[in-house]
Length: 258
Picture 1 (spheres, one colour):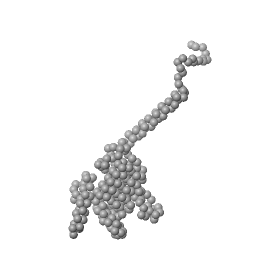
Picture 2 (cartoon, helix red, strand yellow):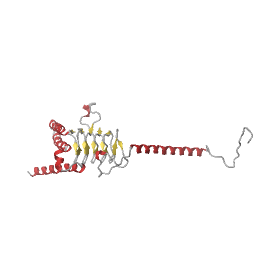
Picture 3 (tube, rainbow, N blue to C red):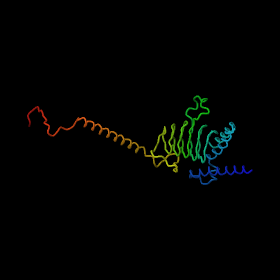
Picture 4 (cartoon, rainbow, N blue to C red):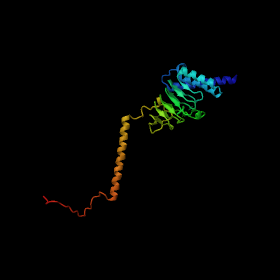
């Protein structure tokens, strides 16, 4: 009886921790009760905890049925085999798909339309069974809406993936990536205590025109350095150097001086 009470208390504490994660990251969350009764991301994760337990106990069909039911009521598809850490937040959530071998750390945030998928699931699928083929998201990662993270890549601690980016390579710790294919958007790693909604630092990214001008200035500087190098080479070879002051020069003329 005592062990049962301890388990109930632990489940309650874990639930409060999950709810408080939404309270911290979503300004639209006005109360714990609101989050508990109306947030599909929380519901999907709670159903997944049950499905994952069933999967771990080899009740595969029942686990898939629970996952299918959760997908039907939340619009979020999480394979029962997925490993999920603590304080996992799926904001809005509609259209999120998380594949079988994905691994998710603590304090990770996903937005709607995110796919954690494989690269070629329909090509020789038999050989891909029991093989790591989906992403790993380390602690504190943020994946923006519509982003596609494909293959067994690793998104590092506190890394950010901007909205609609397509990630096919590892993302280093603290780095923000954007675009198709995703590339680093900044040279300074993100601090672990900062939070960027949708994985996009809107106040740090330069405008497109500014980036273009900066690129042109870099090219001009490179050309200028090259011209100076060529001039130095010519000077060392004595090409184009002015004559000595005491050297006589002959000037031929075709006609009389006027």
